[in-house]
Amino acid sequence: MHKPVIEQGLCPLCQQSNSCAVESGWAIADCWCNGVGFPPKEVLQGAMPSSNSCICESCIDKLNQEVTLGIKRLD
Image (cartoon, rainbow, N blue to C red; front, side, top):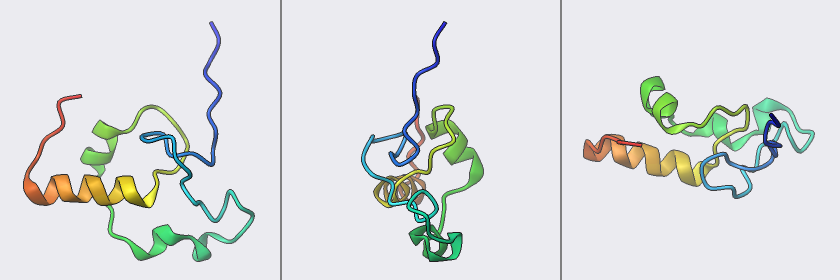
């Protein structure tokens, strides 16, 4: 059985660039993710496929909106 190739520079949710500073050779302190609030861990775990890739800022925003609106994912 072959494992799918995971592109570390792509968001595992939308498959768009995740703009990860570390993947671009920069320090983690320079990454956009240091300036945003993340949804609760259980929300992230429910939304994330098994991947070590970073989620993009747009998907983080959407997950935060779901939390704010009280939307629960069924997938």
